[in-house]
Image (tube, rainbow, N blue to C red; front, side):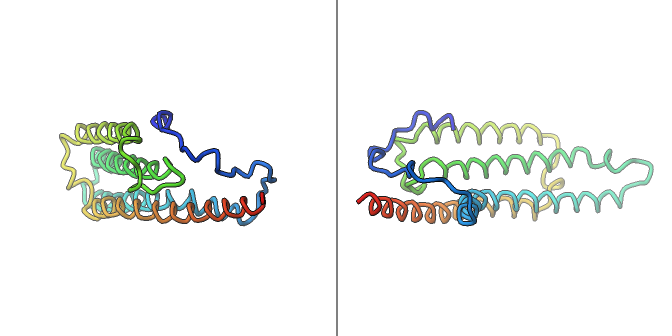
Length: 191
């Protein structure tokens, strides 16, 4: 959001109808539009991280059952639990950055962004991802990550990143269509 302060404004902004003279009503259609446009953008990230964490905890609990009885389960899997949490948080940050890219422009898709006009957004996003990746690499230096985090978790987390982009673009496509329809209706109402 800080990077958006430096964004160039839309030159067509004065021609866009805002609907400021209409009453804003909370009804079923506005609720479903909000759930569709905002909730579905975060759904893939929520499902991927939750499923990954669930599979990882199941794997850890099965390892706890095979350990000796004189040590507690938490002592045996403490480091592995930290690695699982760090892995999920790293991918959650990646998902949130991907989702935030879709909120930068309400009228353009990601591939339509001009790098000249949005270099600062790419820079801030890149710095966030690099810092999170460095933290992850330094936190798992002494731990075997492939032994701690099951392979299914890695597959789910990495496979859902392109799915996240696709879902965000489909939602944005729907949002653009709704906005164009609203603009046409507003022009007709004005005439």
